Image 1 (cartoon, rainbow, N blue to C red):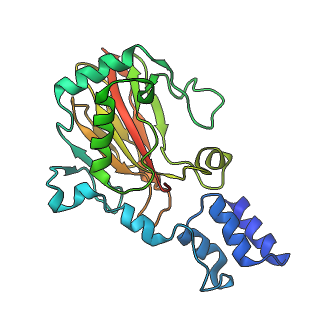
Image 2 (tube, helix red, strand yellow):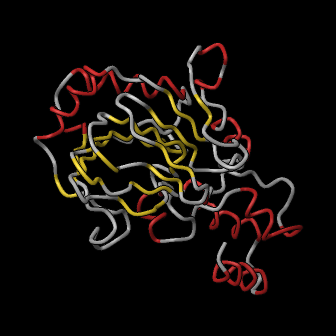
Length: 266
């Protein structure tokens, strides 16, 4: 929480505003139970009921594919206490990947950056929303991704394809929206905060284009059909700064990925 928000909380308490109303406003702006309890301390009544309690995020931190009964072969790429980051090889077949590359090539438009007036100097790829494509494969892939998590929450954000030509990149960024910002209000007021990201490499016949998690000094090499999944939040629902990642510039050839994001509300 920024100093500006902490000052707002203090000023609100000093002017006699009810702590429950302060907590509700903080929730509206994306702050979680842990943060609100920390800043309000004993001022918050024990019987205050959070709309999205810590228990919800603890449940979201246990997606279906981590359950042994799911029989999904995955690799943990780092300590889960730092970041829940996993790879699943051959999640899509080479044939499915090739078909998706073709399907998404004709409906590309310049990629944008949520909350920024322009993507210039930040993100230079092109994007296709798979909802614009009328093909059974899109639904098949969407349902397969949803089945990995089986969270029952926030599954409606559409899959996007990103195409990267030589020299194109997406600078280091978060997939979550920072609490207490206009970005959060604009993009999360209805659908909620982003939780998990699932990104799948559709090809690998190019140079560069690695995915680097900058806070962990960890780099992932693209491989056709490989799915990367990570939780953008800590297990108590607070945004995890270690989820910052960078789509490095492609130096030769063309890179294509698809991405689906999940939210913390239905």
